Amino acid sequence: MEELKYQVDLLNAMNRKLIRDEKMLRLICETSSSAFLYYNYEEDRVQTIANWDHFFSFAITNIKDLKKLYDCVEEKDIIPLREVFFIEKQGMKSQTIEVKLKEKRICIEVEVNIVYDSMSNPTDKIIRFKDVTKFNAQNDELTYMAYYDLLTGLYNRNYFVRLLGEFVRRAQEEKETVAVMFLDLDDFRRINDGMGIIVGDELVQQVGQFLFDLMNDNIHIAHFNSDIYCIAVYNPCGARSVETIYRTIKERLKKPFVLTSGQEIYVTASVGVAEYPEAALTTLDLINCAEIVMFKAKSLGKDKIQYFDGAILDEFLKNVNIENKLKEAVFSQNFTMYFQPQFKTADKALRGVEALIRWKDDHGKMISPSVFIPIAEKNGAIIPIGTWVIEESLKAYAEWKRKYHYPMIISLNISAIQYKQPDFIDKVLHILKKYDVSPYEIELEITESILIDDFDEITEKIVMLRNMGIKISLDDFGTGYSSLSYLKGLPIDTLKIDKSFIDTVITDENTKIITESIIYMVKKLGFETIAEGVETEEQFRYLNEISCDIIQGFYLGKPMPSEGIETLLANMDL
Ligand code: C2E
Ligand code: CA
Ligand code: CA
Image (cartoon, rainbow, N blue to C red; front, side, top):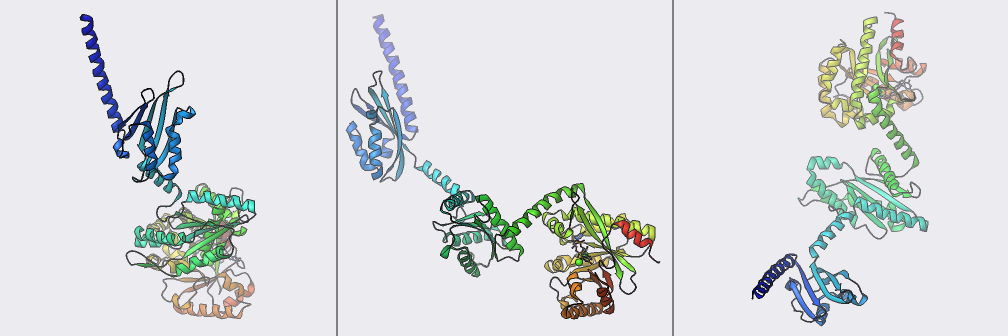
């Protein structure tokens, strides 16, 4: 009796545990959002578990009922499904496939597991059905993002590089060419800054949509970022020649882009072209070369196409080299100041000097300011360099003044970026004070193009500087806009006639007439005139005849170090 009670208790306990276990398993199955089908070989018994209704509207009571599933899936999935259901025929333990349910339009993962006994006979089969539609959609989105640019629908940079790589490989085999067109919208920053990034984005998108239509098996187009697009053309010729594609783009850009707000925007583009194998052999080099020549197109006035040319690349590499060295030079200050004397034409008395920077790189090689100043202006190095120039020049000037007491003027070349610095005037005044130099003793040079490009902003500062007694001189006159009539309103004291005029003033009748009228006009306006680059006695004599006030040039004095000016001052008759 005792024994029996013990057995009953044990059975009850086991039963409770079984119920608990089954409840737990059911919970796990149900919350897994999968459906299960269990088959026991010995009993030939089928049981569906958990979320069966989510997937199928019929029951399965017999292993042969699995056939019913074939009707639910897409045609292409029937055979794989049949095979996966009976993998024990191949002695396999498990396999997973993905099928699509026709009516429900969902993707399901079907995983089959077979349990074998020690004699390798199958004992149990478990089939799990899992809904992977959402997962696949997320995956699709990720795949899309891996290949395409979301804003324009064009390829993204990474994928474009891969596609271009395929073009290049094919071209290598077939002995063909591949063109890369690097396209950058002109003045895009102005649109973005002026009208807002929403307008900018919409424009980028619309240009992208237009470019999208140009794509085919032999033309891939990507949106790199901002306003930059890149086009790869396999074997460019005929309808897909670079010229034709460019013409199509240019035609489209002649018309405005109409934004959703109704706003109409006109835009132009600069395009650089590099071809495999002429310009470069690798994809990245091709893109780089195309980008470099695109910059050339920009510097030539935008709205242009520029084809690759070795000289452009050389110039670019030279500039990069200079830019890198320039960064070091700003710290190590491998600069020196030279001074070129300016003489009064009438009596050859010293009127003053123009301060000109010199740069010797680490190998002692002299680099011309005409080369490195534009680079320093682009990368911002002009600010510390410019301050150093003012400081060094005034330091030298103060020394001459202390030693020789000769009344003269020192001219400083100032770049537009310096003028635009909010503290520019304070900086100048501070250095003047530091070296005890009066504002009346200095002259700041400014080029014509700067004055015109940023007229309002710079004119305002110039007027303030002049009110303090500082002279302003207009440099390189004749190289830019050269309209005599606009001179009238300019707040300047001195006008420097560019060397290119002086070069031909003796030989060319037209130059003669122009130079004479400039001097006549300028005198009437009350400015002084300086002729730059005077190299011969003949030029000097002629300039004297037409009453040009001041002469600067190799004929009377080359740029020289401070000591040279001291020698000059020491020998001056006072
Ligand atoms: P720039 O202001 O027009 O300076 C005159 C240039 O003509 C100087 O070249 C000078 O050496 C040269 N030159 C003067 N007389 C003659 C001549 O008779 N024959 C010939 N062939 N050349 C003559 P440099 O010193 O190479 O300067 C070139 C340009 O670099 C300057 O043109 C100026 O735009 C810029 N630059 C020079 N120093 C500075 C500076 O400190 N700051 C800034 N922002 N620019 C500077
Ligand atoms: Ca100058
Ligand atoms: Ca000049």
